[in-house]
Image 1 (spheres, rainbow, N blue to C red):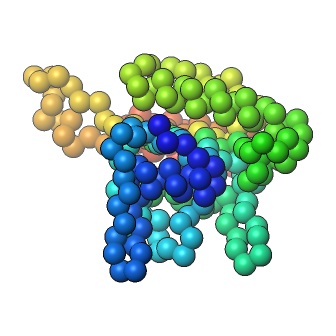
Image 2 (cartoon, one colour):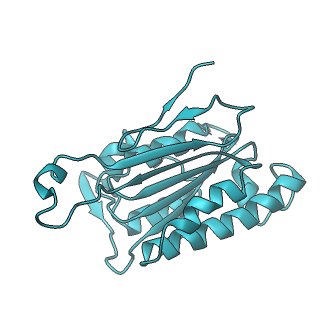
Length: 212
């Protein structure tokens, strides 16, 4: 498993199949030994075009972790929290999870103990560790139940969780022909009603957010 924060997450993406262009040539740095990636606060690749051209080739399971105030602001460069979601959306793989903490900061996931709020900082670090373990257990053959439980256990500090999983394919003789046209399973859980309206869940499709 490759893991990284910020530009370290970009490095992890290169190791699992992201392809960037340099001097007119496509650089493919994929390491086939790496079977999954944990991407914390991943910004877009600096100076590159739309992320879909770079990230569509990433097919291993990925876990994306960010926060609603995950903003990068340095002289000459700005990247809002929406960029982390754009990276998640651009990943081409059929198994990916996005977890968004409420509030926080870009540096909250580092060894700095005060950024994003002293109390929230510690809670997020614990929750991030638990989420990473649940993700790895799921990737390497265990149930996805720990991932499901995680969002409930940490609902006080999580804004939303979004997962994309492959469609389930029936055994031969049990509707395999129909399964060929099925869609990936997607669901969103909005866990902070004070921040966003509730969602409606529809099996087999993207959940839609209700209007106030």
